[in-house]
Image 1 (cartoon, rainbow over the protein chains, first blue to last red):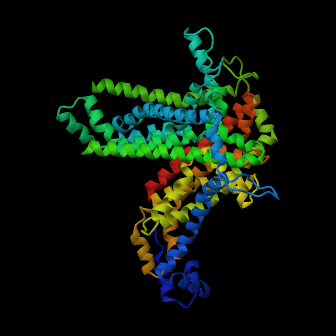
Image 2: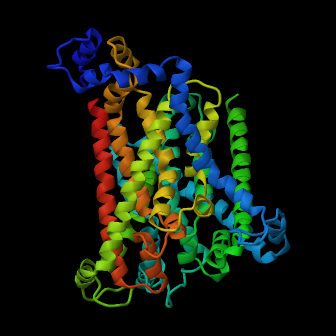
Image 3: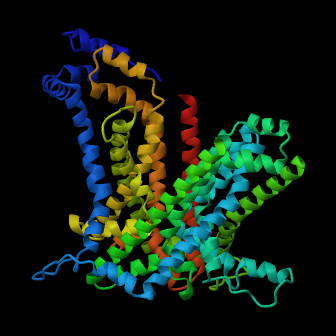
Length: 328
Length: 261
C-alpha cells in the first residue's frame, strides 16, 4: 500500500495555484468543508460523539428494539391493535404456556433435542478438529479445512433437501443397506428424531468445528511432549492436557450449536413428523393464523429465548470453573 | 499406539468429508434423473429438468429477486457494520462492552425467534411484509459479521500511517477515507460476499417477512412441501453451484489480499 503524501503536504502549505492539486487537497481547503470539519473536530469529545451517535442509535433501535418490542407485545392482550379496542397489559400469554401440556411437550422436546444434537455434533467434529490441528502439516491444514467448509456455503434448505434424499424410503441409505443384504424392507428413517438429528448435525457441524479447531491449534505441542516425558500415556495426555486446553473451544462451539438448533424451523418441518413437533413450529403456528395470536407467539418466543440463554449461561459458567479447576 | 491413533483419525476425517459431501452429490445426481419420482436407483438420465428451470420465467425472476435482496441488504449492513467497527476498535469508553454485546446479538438469536421479533418490529415501524422488510431484516442480521471481520482487520492497521497523515495536515475524515478505508477494503469485500451468501441462503427471515413473492429458499421450501420432484433438484443445484463458487472465490480472494498487504 502506498501513501500519497504529496496531497497532504499541498493542503498544508496552502499552495495558491490549483493546478496539480488533488481533489482531497482542494476539499480540505474548501471553506464550507473546512468550517464543518473544524466544528466537528473542535474537541475530542465532540468528535467522539459524532462518531458514536449513529452506531449507538442503530444497535439500540435495530438490534435491541425488536427483542424489546417482542417482550412488550407478549405482555399485551391484543396485537396488532384493532381500532376501537383497548390494549391491556396481561400475563395471560405466559399462563397459557404453563396451563397446557400441548405446549409443554414441544418445548421440552426442543431442549432435549438441542442438547442431544449438540452433544452428537461435538463427538463427531472433535476428532476431525483434533486431526486437523495436531496431525496435519500447516500447509495442508488450510486446504483440508477449506474442503470441509465448501459445502457450508450452500443454504439451509438445499442441504436439508439433500438429507431428505439420503434418508428417504427409496433413498441412498436404504438402497445401500438393501444392496449389502442387511435389510429386506426399507427402514423409515424420515420424519423421525433420527432424521432431524442427522439434519441438524449436518447443518451445524461447521459452527462446532471452527471453535474447536482454533482452540486445539493454539495448544503448544511441547505441552504434550512434556506430559509424555513425565510418563503420561496417550489417554492420560488427552484427558489431562488436550481436553482441558480445548475447553474454551468446546464451550463456545456448544453454545453456538445449542442456540442455533433451538431455532431451526425448516429442518423441523421438512425432516420431522407429527411425533417430533418442536417449539419453533408451535411458535410459528401463532403467526400463520389470525393476528390476535401474536401476543401468545411473542410470549412463547420469549420463554424459549430466555430458557436457551439461561441454559447456555449456566453451561458456560460450568465450563469456566472446570477450566480453572484443571489448570490450578 | 501413536501410529494407530493417526490412522484412525485420518479415516475419521475422510469419513467426515464423505458425510459432508455425499448428500449434496446425491442431490445433484437426482436432478438428472429421467423420471418424476425421487429415489434410487436411477435408470435413465436427462437434462430436461434443467431446460425447464432455465425456461421458467417465474423461477428465473425468483433468482433475480433473491440476488437483489442480497445486494441491497449487504450494502446497508456493510455501511453500518464498518461504522460500528471503527467506533469499537481500539477505543476505550464507558459502555463499550454493552455496545459490543448488542452488536453481535442478532447473530446469536435463534432463527425462529429472530424472525418473529423482526416480524413484530416491522409492524411497529410500518414496514409491510415484502422486499423492504426482508432487506431490512437481512441487513440487521448480517451487521455483526461485518463488524467482527472489519474489527479484526482494523486491529492490524499500523497507527503510524494515520498519525503521519494527520501530521501532514489531513483531517480525521480525509485520513479515514484515504488511509483507513483502503486498508479495510479486503475485509469489506470478504464480509460483503459473506453477507450476500447469508442473505441469499436465508430461509426463516425471508419466510416470515416475505409477501407474496418468494425468495429462492422460500420457493424451494414451498415446492418441497407439495412434493419432491427432480425439478427442485435442478433449482437447488443451480443455487448450490452459484453460492459455492462465490464462496470459494471469496475465500481465495480474501486470503490473497491478506497475504499481499
